[in-house]
Image (cartoon, rainbow, N blue to C red; front, side, top):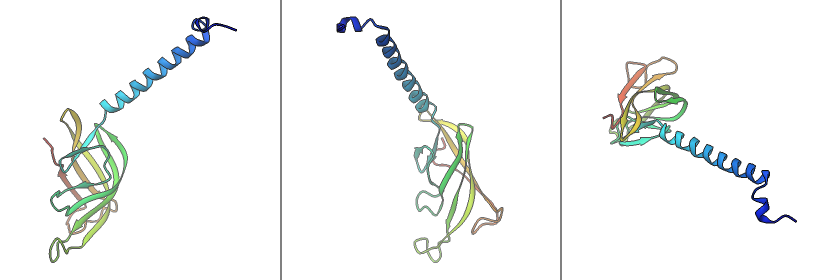
Length: 148
């Protein structure tokens, strides 16, 4: 039977140690790059990563995009599909009815906010190219909150 001190110098021990160190370094590098290269979007004063919804009017959420499925996401911009909702505010905004349309969502205009690359502008266009509900255009666009 070999002594434990002899096992320390065997090739198997060295290979195991090198593997553990290599995997640990690789995992650290992967996580560090993912965190430092993260791109965010501003949404009602909060920096978020790939949010499911974005709001135009944060006070009452009278216009919003939700059910967003992102197809691309980078510092060069983001693209996805979602549902546009707008409140008709008839007879009041509390009692109003929401109208909706299937849309394409594009985020653009990256700025550094709180040290993080952040997309700060949204453009939505109806998938069927018909006008958005309660609008005379198939497109709506607005700067997102915290746009610097």
